[in-house]
Length: 68
Image (cartoon, rainbow, N blue to C red; front, side, top):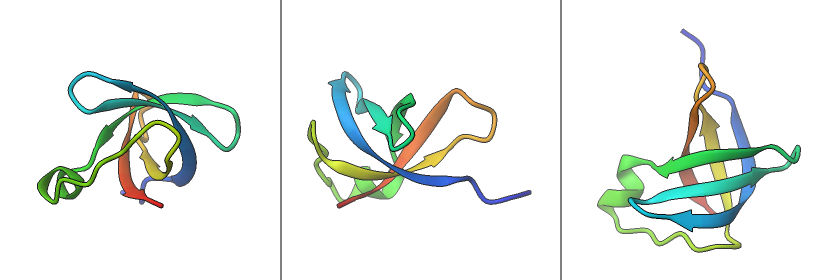
């Protein structure tokens, strides 16, 4: 099993249930959710924040793992 691809992007829109629409560096837009550790430590993510995202290998969604 390989590591998920890590890319950076900018939060474009905040949706209910800690879902976010993130625009990646390549111009692609993905639906992303907060990683468990970010929820646990109550790290806030706002529109316009630069985030690190791990892409799901099957398409679908991505997981926000770091805010910078």
